[in-house]
Image (cartoon, rainbow over all chains, first blue to last red; front, side, top):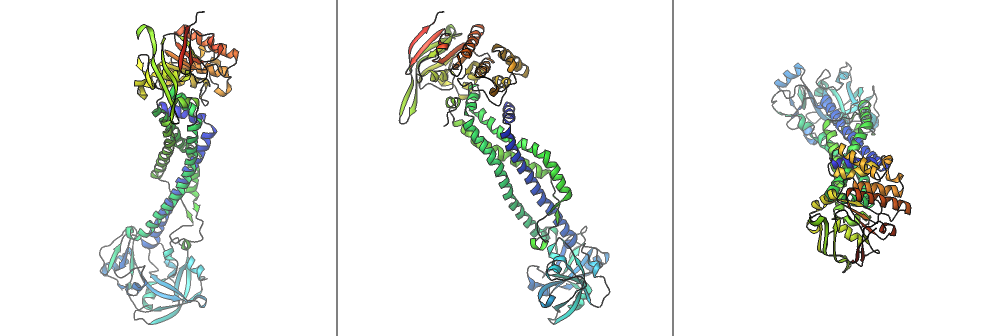
Length: 391
Length: 232
């Protein structure tokens, strides 16, 4: 209690020195919470978008299907099992057929994945209803990045070539009926979406599919022969691993920010040992033990973190709340460029755990950097300290 | 405590290492100080005055011999016991005042009482009383930078006296003061000595101080060369 009182007095008496240290530390404090909140918000948004648009409550994959091995796609299809058909009829499951093909925009060739879905499905939020048109051509829709990269517009025709189940090449003109914008790159880049019935006819796989997406509220509907259920944990594992890497990358920034603040405090404390030797000697002469002096200086340094939290709260709470409300526009051109689900605006999410953990980390680290120079005091002879004799 | 002897120094030797050799700061010193003395250790620089004061104040320990302060052998004290002795029984007055610049006059004087864990009301009463002794109640909220040298030393005296210690050690208390302020400080200390029976031990080579002393101990090269009572 005494050390706290004296440390507080010393800090308040330190005026500008204290203000500068506390200001830098509070800036680090607010920035760390903001940046970590941004990544947390990104993770929440991206997972939500992936669930709503792509993976629903989980997916059934054909046992051969491996999205990272294009050679498996050719054989990854099977007739729709009865249980699945019942769920499709109830609207809690939707099949997706996947095959490989090529398109020829402006005379160039580009490999694409043909993914087809029931235009009337309501399991995922992909705007498939646009495919529900009655035209002679095959109606397709593409993502905004796919359209941009291939200079495709609504109403354009493009040649698609594919191989059917027997390996016979075929081709047709498809019409772009819709271009959608999504934050999930695996729905956009290199993919052409078409109605599943047309697709099944094209590849001669009537009533077959590659994967099923379950309703996001429902999840697994039981075992489907020839298909394996993939839950969220599996389907989001890659994304979560990438987010984890972003956390590690973010930690570099935290360390940098903290270093800035801590170097200032460390400097102040080291300087204090030399500049305030007389003060230390005086404390000892007045009856403090060297241990008490170390405690005083350590608490004095550590209290920077407390003051920084208070100062940080005064301008940080309005700033963080404002950011959570208006969001932060990520400085990348598109989700495809970024390689993972990324909304145009990220709305930071600040959890109690984040704030408490950040506060504790800053408090502990500040106390440690204050303790290290304070420990030197124990080597100071009181008789020399009183005279302010530099050792 | 026998015959009110507060401090007893017997065959005290203090050496400091210098390079590969050593410097003898005090050599076979034998002294005793009774309660209520107003004594000066006089001698040129390097004669061992400050070293002796540091040992009496339990800031340092003898190399050989014994220094007993208030029945406690300084050599045998743990760091905690030495701190307790300083905290409760010994007041220090320094040549350069050693006031804490970020504290007000009140806070500087209050500090020893905080270390004694006195209550707020006790602290307040003692601080005010102490500042009245030195005539500085009007400067209670000033900081050391706003005070003259004489005023700073009076604050230093108030800080040393606030806990009403048995012994006050003053190392060259007037060295940084002009004649007027020096006399004022010495008169204040003389008054406290006679009213409170506090033992004052000075290290000085200032003639102005010497004229106030009741006992003068002269040191040269770490040895006591004379020890005389001064009758006024």
